[in-house]
Image 1: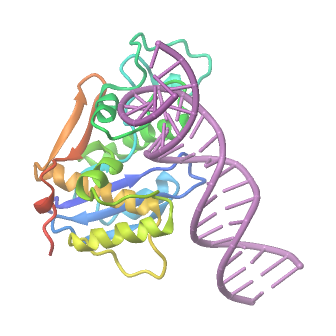
Image 2: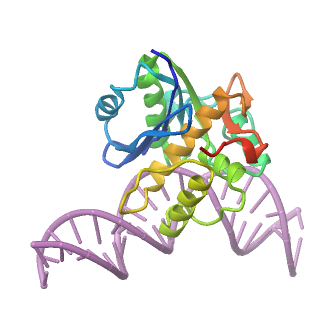
Length: 226
DNA sequence: GAGCATTACCCTTGAGCAGA
DNA sequence: TCTGCTCAAGGGTAATGCTC
């Protein structure tokens, strides 16, 4: 069976809240898009596709800075410290330097539970035997749709993003309400994963702290309309 | 009016930028 | 140099809208 599907995931901090997922094929057709909560539910959703998934793009850190460990995000008594004066990972600092603001993965992050769940998600998906990469939908959005502005939570912004995606040949299944920002971020994560496979993306970071993948800035023909 | 779903705002940390 | 502002993402919560 050919591996020609790309999975994007936008995880929330716990199973109590909705996370987003999206599966697209090599022609950018959306195969499945929606929400999930527990890992078991996600596994059930992915069951029909798992043999065909080529690359998984996750919107979240897949590893801590090299001087920190998992315990730094679970225990208040952990004594690991970043000796480096700057917090976060190299890849995150490079993104900020390029103008793509992001949160730094550090011990005093206010979203430790989300960081930890991203690590767990990577472990959980390792059974898929495909490439698992870290992506940053905000940067993908900025590169592919530089004229798109606003706050992603707002209804107006999401409708506008859907229109931009449609103009680029990515047609979302008709729905009464606009898609949630979780689903749209997951879609952008899947789009980034496809671009990685097409060698139209670059990786930022280093071996010790990990890499974040973003689209190359060749924009117009990155996504060929259908 | 009750109950539920949706929306939008505020809070957190930290880097970058503008202006005093 | 210092201060204040902006804004990344997720959680909490108040406000709003809709259905029964």
